[in-house]
Image (cartoon, rainbow, N blue to C red; front, side):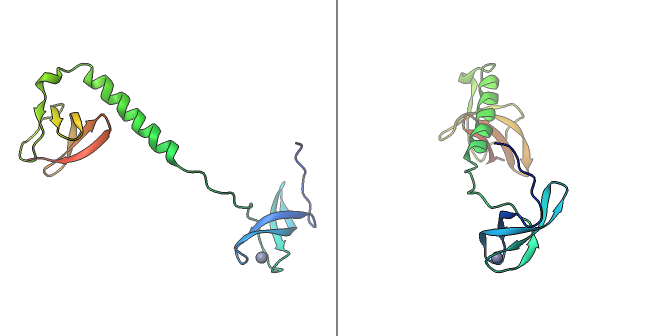
Length: 134
Ligand SMILES: [Zn+2]
């Protein structure tokens, strides 16, 4: 598909904020090769050109790749530790950096950093979590 250079007077699909939808519009003025102002044929309003809106794609992909990164990190960290030395997680215990803990729900985790007063960030297979500690 070759790109057609538009000119004032040409028909164009544009998003109109008054009609709140994509409408058939007419190019009023151009800035370089892109429409600058258009006139909506529905409400006759002249406004700044906005490309027609497209349905939003779900952002789930980015979330899963983030979890994937943490899972890989967890796998490589856990490869170097003795899981039999894991301490059972308890809110009333205090934890050292890199300590290996065993959580009843999340399983094995490694203490990453202090996340605030009485809070530590722990990397589990399912991702990082902030946990209470002493
Ligand atoms: Zn309109």
